[in-house]
Every structure is written in structure tokens, then in C-alpha cells.
Length: 212
Image 1 (cartoon, helix red, strand yellow):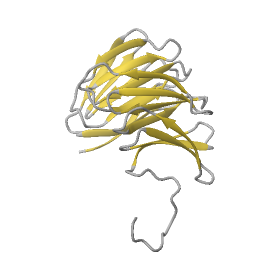
Image 2 (image 1 turned 45 degrees about the horizontal axis):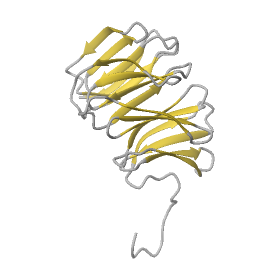
Image 3 (image 1 turned 60 degrees about the vertical axis):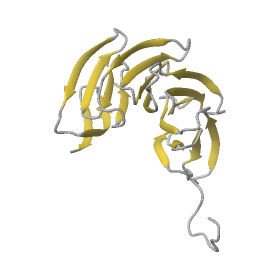
Image 4 (image 1 turned 90 degrees about the vertical axis):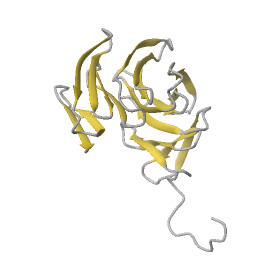
């Protein structure tokens, strides 16, 4: 900042207004970050912290969610104004962009790529879960999970890709997205906000963490 005579530490691996989300590549050699108030996401070298490239988005309000495909070739980014971007990880080239259709969707807080890399799922502040075809760009399916608009929003595919778990605040749903139906819903009012979730490797259970 202005007037400083010395800097302690490093400028590497920094977002000006703070990082909103992080994701490691499957091989562990790089990681990507999304940042508040910035119209881009960043790819970093995990070994030395050097910046490799930017993924440019046309949304100045920020990027809030990020995810790699299972083979590490694609990066999905959730941004403000309901925008979702898909990039080629090796080059930073934009492959697709989508917009969650509800005009009340201010931000996309969660993104995930299916294990085969052919589908992107997203969830935004409008509480709608969307499924997008990476090849054609078409919307496959959407449903409303409901919940407070600015509490946590998370999506995660099962290891076999047949199910998607989605979280909005204390509510969690599991959908058979190919059949376009929700197969289960759990709403625990004692859990004010579920902040993370993960499928077990065999896909038979889901682990969540929350605060009350």
C-alpha cells in the first residue's frame, strides 16, 4: 500500500479482495482459485506458488465457485449475475458459458463437473440447481431446492456420476439428474448452514459439515 517501506511475505497466491473458492487439479500439480470482486479466476503452480494463467469472465462482481473435471482438462467457474463458465485448463480458452435463467440469481455459489466431464452442475443464490451439457451447451434439467438466498450453496456428483447432491443452507437434496427427478430431500433445522459435503468413494454415503 501507499507509504509502506517494507513488505513482509509474498504477493504470490493472492486475490485483491480475497479468495472465495479453491480447487486442486486431480494430479495435484496445480490449483485454481476464484476471487471476490474480480472478473477472472486464476490457475497456480502448487509447487512454487507462481501464477500460470487467468480464466477471464465478463462479470465484474466476482467469481465464487470453481471445480476441475476428473481428468483435469476443464475448469468450471461460477460467477456473479448467474453466469457459469467452462474453460480449457491448459490454455485458458473459454469453451462454454451459461446463465442461470432466474433474474434474481445474483451469484453462482457452487459448480461441479460430472466424472466423465460431459456435464456441469451449478447452484446459485436463486436456489435453483442446473445441469448443463458441455458438448451442446444445452440446459439438461433444473429444479428448485429452496432455502435462504445467501446461505451456503454446494453441488457434488456421486463417484459414478448418476446422482448429484445439492445443498442450500440446512436443506440437502439428491437427484437422479438423468431421469430428471429428485430422489431424496433432508432438511434439518438444527443445522443452520451446511458448509461442505463429499461423497464416500463407494458412493453409498454422503458426509457433511455444518455450524448451528
